[in-house]
Length: 412
Ligand SMILES: [Zn+2]
Image (cartoon, rainbow, N blue to C red; front, side, top):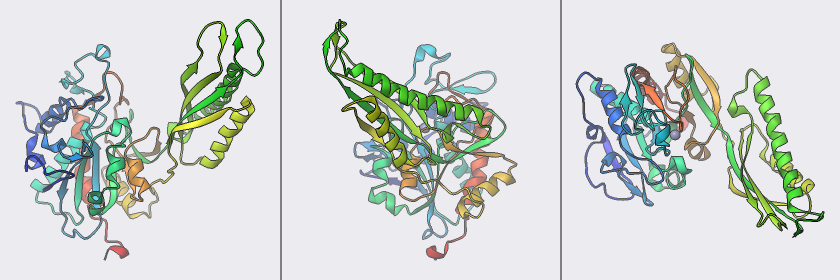
């Protein structure tokens, strides 16, 4: 394996697979490794990546690390195993155990921030590659393990920047695996696309005046109209989700009113009021038409109502899940061979996969956790050690399957 330092010379030339150690007696070493990693406080707003070389390579003041297992035919497009190293904050008083202690209860449930999102996957990749190497297996395509920061705060200093970096181009990636979500049932969920997040603020100006009168053309009347339009649409989408058997959250547009601003005193009619919404739009929606709808709502609300985007993602690329697609065929066939049922969905939130897909690289979101409640970003996030260990075995099959996808005509 080779270890790439992006942006800076690596402070230590140490094989990333050797740096995580600590094997308490009686525990599977992979589980110990996982718990060890969970104790690293890579938590926002000030993630501590410590002295760990695995996480310690600088690019634009953040850190991207790549571990490469060169294939027998390195000219072919490579496989990317991506995971992010950062985690979201905790409300410790809501947790049963210290969120960074990786406490394991009698059932083998390991409690920690990042146990599902997505430190489990990082260690599963590493351990699967380690086992494949120990077994003497050689892969045709090169495999890159990539550890990126900043995903939980939008990926702007992480993957969004890195996909434009020359070092990324050099990796010559043909297909990527990235994070998914747990599935409470027997099946495993895979994600082949994502909803586009739009953050919008609608500005409602109006005539100011004394609070004792019926002033015409007030900001509040316009604001009410705007709120009604957005929230009526929200009801419709909620209804669509709840009345269709085949819809999941990723198939509908969610609308949430998240901020309201305005007003100076009880008896003063304000000259302006603002309202902000978080929208998540599935790839099936015509975004131009959707924006026209928003424009219409603003127009109907009254004079001079305008809107502004804080975030407006327009990328609607989805990864093929057609059985004729060589990558998907390899992935799904390996799952079938393991008797695994897959549920194919659009990811309800945003992950780094959107930046990978946006540059034309197919990506599948997959975190191998079944029989597990979805607890990412939640209190008492946990993963059972048996589910975790099974995931390693799954990657042991999936990685060689993807790295064995036959050369494409343009790769010859
Ligand atoms: Zn994540």
